[in-house]
Image (tube, rainbow, N blue to C red; front, side, top):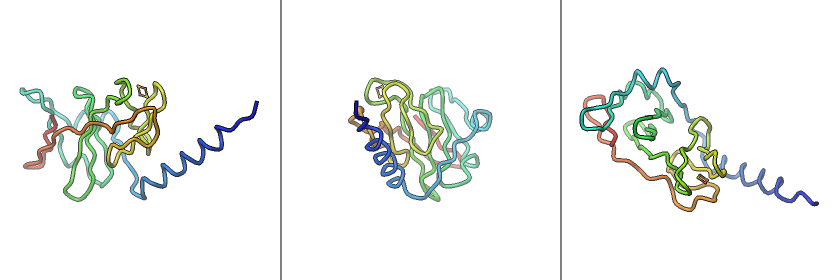
Length: 137
Ligand code: FES
């Protein structure tokens, strides 16, 4: 049997990584993230902005199944990490966020699908920034 998928998959992966640009994503360790987040009485989560020191920093928020990303000097975006294919939580540890169920890949900078089977981007979650805290939810 001819192996035609490996070359295609390698090229697609290289194109996806190139499309992500040059900013490196920097996920915080679980301990760092835990010290940076606080669940509020209203169910929303406050994240200390000092934990997101550099553009590309990522804080995973387990209680919301979400991740907060520092996109720019004063720009933050949060995504619901439920894969839009069948809802499995997406792994945020790499430069491309990968769903472990069927391999969908997402661009962490905009939530867009890089590779299916998912068809829709990750859903954004409202973020309000004030007084050194990003409130997500
Ligand atoms: S649930 Fe994520 S790719 Fe299927």
